[in-house]
Length: 278
Image (cartoon, rainbow, N blue to C red; front, top):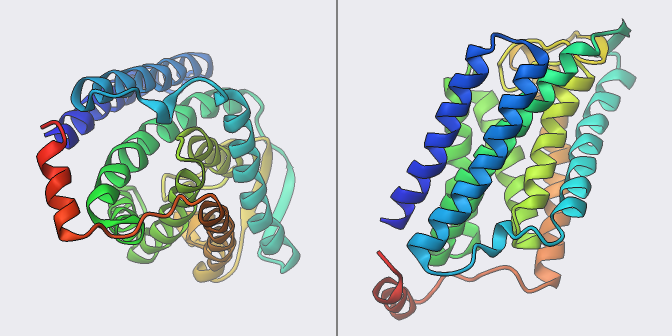
C-alpha cells in the first residue's frame, strides 16, 4: 500500500499543478510561479508521505547538498542535449535562424521544473526505489524504463520509436543518476536541464509536445530517425547514443560506490515483505 499512497500523493500534486498551468493560459510569469509552487509542493508531499508510510527520514530528498546537486545535474542535462544538437548541426540536420523569444523562456522554466520534479518523484523516487527492493537494480531499472517510455505514448505526435527512445534515454540516464547518488536531486537536475535545453534554448519539440519558443530560432531537417521528426530530438539516434553513454558513466560511478543491488534471495524478499510497513 505504500506504493499506492506515495503515487497518489505525488500524482495529485502533479494533476493540480498541471491544471493550474493550463489555467494561466501560457502567461510566462504566472506559469513560472505555478510551476515552481508545484515542484516545491510535490517535494514536500513526497517527503511527508514517505515518512508516514515507511517510518523513516526521506533522505533521498534531504535538503543538505541539494543546491549543488541540482546545479550539477542541470549542467549535465544541458551538456548532453547540447551534444545531440551539435552532432545534428555539424552533419547538416539542424539549422539556426537567429534569436528566438526571451519572454517565453520564463514560462518554460516553470513548466519544466514541475514536470522534472513530479516525474522523478513518481518514477525514480517511488517506483524504481521500491521495485528495486524486491527485484534488484537491473530488473527494476528495466521495468521502470519501460513504464516511463509507455507513459510518453500519451503525448501528441508520440510514436512507438519515440517511446522506446525515451525509455532508453531517460529510463537509463535518469535512473542511473539516482543509483549513483541515491538522492533525487541529480536526476531532477538532469531531467530539468535536458528539457530546458530542448525547449528553452533550442526551441525544439519535447517528447512530441510541439515546438517551443526558446532563446534560439532553429529548425531540424532530415530523416526522422536522425532528427526525431515531430517527436523532437529525443527521437534521434544521437540522443539514444549520448544518453546511453551518460548512463554508463553514472553506472560506473554507482558500481565504484557499491550502490548496485543484486536481486534478493527468496528468503530475503519474504523477510522484507514481513517487516516493511503496509
